[in-house]
Image 1 (tube, rainbow, N blue to C red):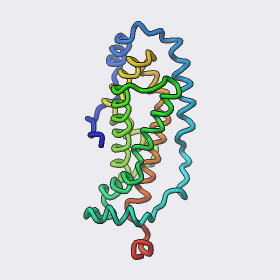
Image 2: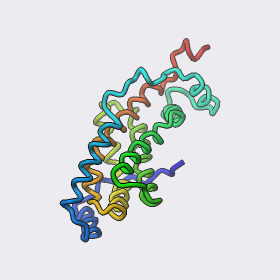
Image 3: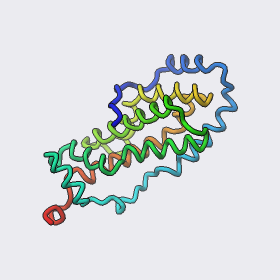
Image 4: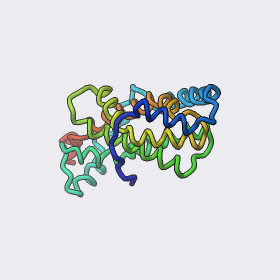
Length: 202
């Protein structure tokens, strides 16, 4: 399991400038084309219209497993347990990884670790935000903003490995990550109370 990363704010203008200085040998204009192509690839991975019918709200085996750990429906940790069994974080990470590999080839270890950390941070912050009363998209944006530290590391690694502008890369990825956060919030809210009583009793 990927350790939880430190929370941080979005990169400031000065940090962005420092990142750009680190990659000053990179030709920025040509790099924007593959970044734009990546945005197109990612757009097909996640969408706002998640089919909730595909989300098994009962999943008695998942419910039983979480209860066996003395985790009670209605608590945030119960939603986290259920989504862990559904591999929500791993699915989000894999979707982003595949899109990057299709555009830039295999990821090296450092870039892969940076991507995993950012995917986990967004997933974790989104699930924790799901118990708040705001609408899903607002909470998804808040979760995204809370992962500035992991996103900054991802910017640095993508620039080092591929030569593209790291800030432009994460800007292109942003709509997909926000949509993943929305889906995580939606899933968490759907399962947090446990399966329907008639199902749980069977």
